[in-house]
Image (tube, rainbow, N blue to C red):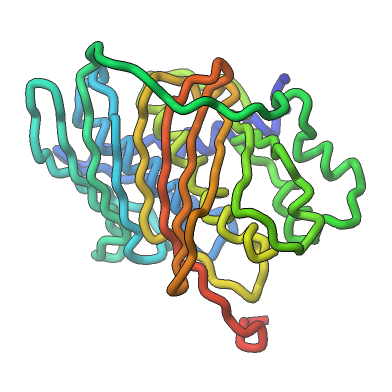
Length: 298
């Protein structure tokens, strides 16, 4: 599929926001990401933090795991400063700690580990059998189909120019408010070619991994991401990168939510390439709090 000029523009904008300015040794600044949101999208902070940490590590040693905590809502009208602490440089592993700072306060913290490539035992879970991305409707196809059951919030989201092309394996959950098992799968890739080393592909996947993961918990309750009677926020996010991959080729993101309680939801995802290799895993706990619509701002 050839990306439209607007799609390329959206991808270029994402890559610009993932390009950090070095301020001093171990200190970087990311451009502000004002997109009309009330707070900075968590996946963007995650992606920028990956770039900041990777900027202090030789690119021959890819990141293999990260664990991040979202501490405060980010201000989309201000740049974010990333302070990288070089915890350890070992023979096989490298460890970094990153703090994302706005208005003099930490809004996000992340630990990341990098591993020198080496051979070892291999096994993995099997990729589920789902339709190929080419057989599924694009966002534009869903809109052109004139599906009257799609809520306006989803229509607005689907109509935006986005850097990531998403193909929903089963879009019927958006047309029904019936609770169902808390699972969903999507294909995703960048809307255009992506150059650069492995770190940029990892940063882009980290960016993309945050958007639908917490949404998976809503499936069990017949709720949607933009419903006004729920409050959602990512609390923490962890990823493991198992095998090399390209974020500009189709990846299948298989997600489920085994538990929700105490106004928190636990979600996890397995990410496969088209060849069926498990390339990454993600886990997130998020705030999922019911609230009275009468008290929401108009």
